[in-house]
Picture 1 (cartoon, rainbow, N blue to C red):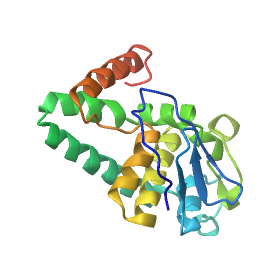
Picture 2 (cartoon, rainbow, N blue to C red):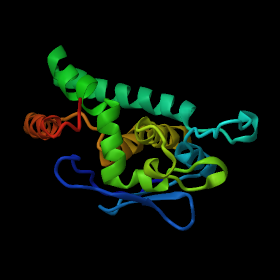
Picture 3 (cartoon, one colour):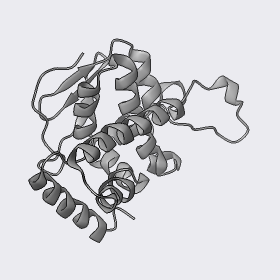
Length: 196
């Protein structure tokens, strides 16, 4: 279940996310919240693949790969729908989505700046960060995608999923002025070598 609040484009303000003590509610710094009906979806979305050398994979809980696949598909579908409505050309799609917000380097950056990386879990729900355990940088991107996938699987609502996506930095502009702002925002990320 989601709260009502108007989302803003990710380049308009920096939004952070955390999990409330109930363990099922994502709360965003702009006041938007999403409470999972199925808390296991959130737990799975947070859990990255981490298998110490010599460990038995069967002893480890399911990790976020499947939900990341769902989230990746939702990101593409929702953004592609807006691209189609805008009647944008293929270059706009490539610049904004394919070689922009869908890149692992960008999603990893968003995991860092939104605070998603702070609640990534390893086996048995242990918190973990890349610098502590040597996780791959792709784990932040996978977790962003998996959270999007978990929200979709939990509510099956495109509007709610889109609101969560936007707050995690995944957004295709709806208006011409938004497109210019997004292009400038992505150009800054490219110059800083965040994307690429």
